[in-house]
Image (tube, rainbow, N blue to C red; front, side, top):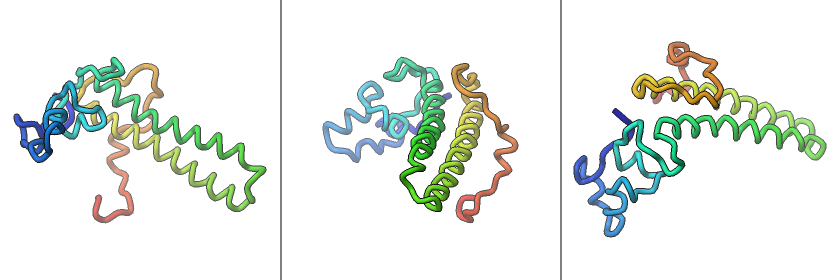
Length: 147
C-alpha cells in the first residue's frame, strides 16, 4: 500500500511521453524530483524521503505546514494594523481567519482519510485533529461539480 500513480514503463507508461533524459529521471524513483514523485510513482508509506522521514510522516508534516503558514500570515497581518485603513484591515483579517479554519479542517480531512490506508499514527509532534473524518465527510462545499 502507498500513494501515487505508477506512470513508469512498468505502469501506465506515461513517462515515455517525455524526451530523454527526463523520461529516465522521472521514471526512476531514486532520481525523480520529490515534487513529482507521486505523479510518476506509486510509493510505499514507508518510503524514505530526502528529509529522512517516511512518505507518511512527510505527508503529515506538509499538511501541517499549510496550517502553520496561514497562522504566520495572520501574525504578520495583525502587525500591519496601524498601516492599513480599518475596513481593509478587518476584511483581510476575516479572510485570513477563514483560511486558518479551512487549513485545519483540510489537514484533518486529508490526514485522516489517508490514515485509513496507511494505518500509521499522525506524528506526535503535530496537533491532533479537531474534526473527525465522519463529520468532515458531511461537509458539502458550494461547488456543484465537486459534490
